[in-house]
Image 1: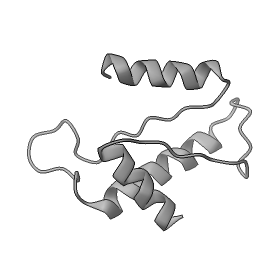
Image 2: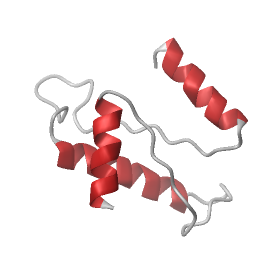
Image 3: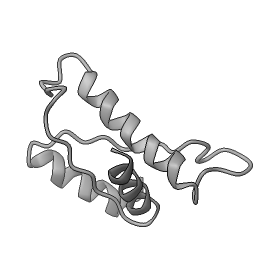
Length: 85
């Protein structure tokens, strides 16, 4: 994470929000990754949210509300996730 990303995450956690940070398919590996593939990025965000809601011991309700936030690649990915949901 970059320092400013960590600051945003810490503020969310201090408010009592559960936070999931998506690791996009192929990101950080050699070769082409899914930076401009809205479907792959959107599904990565939805998969992360669904997985977090299913983790035992978190107190998160599987049917509870979910908010999406992102900027740059994350903004495009969250917009795609909202479209796909």
